[in-house]
Image 1: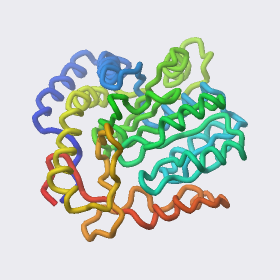
Image 2: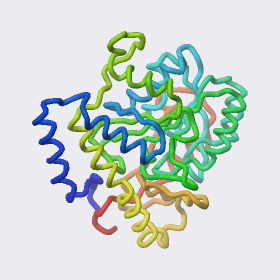
Image 3: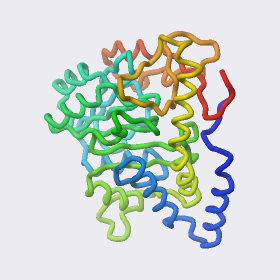
Image 4: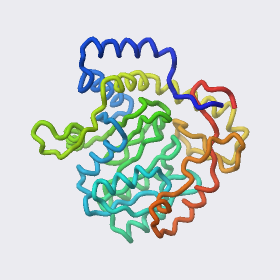
Length: 324
């Protein structure tokens, strides 16, 4: 099965119509399609949304808003390096926590121990592979009790939900990525979602250098109109793509691969990855094969993270792709 971007060819005509409108108006940035993409994502995710040119820009805006400079932020080691690097670039100190073997996401038991040890101001929880972290409710409740700012890395989580609750609805903010490999993509791009009105307004200024009063010391993380137009089309298609992937997994894969990530009752995965715990010849590789604490030469005892890096594989599962 060859890699396939989750874009339906039926949407080409509409996308070209949007692009023609952008060319006609000659407004290539800060126009109606960025606002429309944000509106569509807000309806889908049920939270106010701010579009960025990248996941990193949205993450930096959130970390800057919560002023983590000089403070400790806990982060699962089983994630992409973008997650801890966002903390470092925002002036924070990163410490790592272990994951669970069954969902590859942040371990609540280990998290509690690390909180006691490091006294973090904030924490990242990362939804790995398209599903929601199995212990998100416990983690979110614990963070509220301890006054810890909880941020959700939703880079993989498009189309996921748990008992009708969407990624980004547990923490202070959720950060999505629309990189080319994601369940839906704009090539590059990100989205910040939050119920925090102050953060939403701050994020809008941050992505635009803080113009025009410059009270917010932001940078250029604007999304251009052509990219936003793709986002409008893709958001409308997301439900169908997620349903197709779930159908394919249930019909063709689940019966063959019992030793896989098995979701709790009421959880729906967006299936960014179909993760199994046995070698497979046609595997597309690992979600992550090297933990962040090892990349950064951090001396950490994270046995589950190191086990996961060696003992999981991903099956090809692409929207309307060839059968495995």
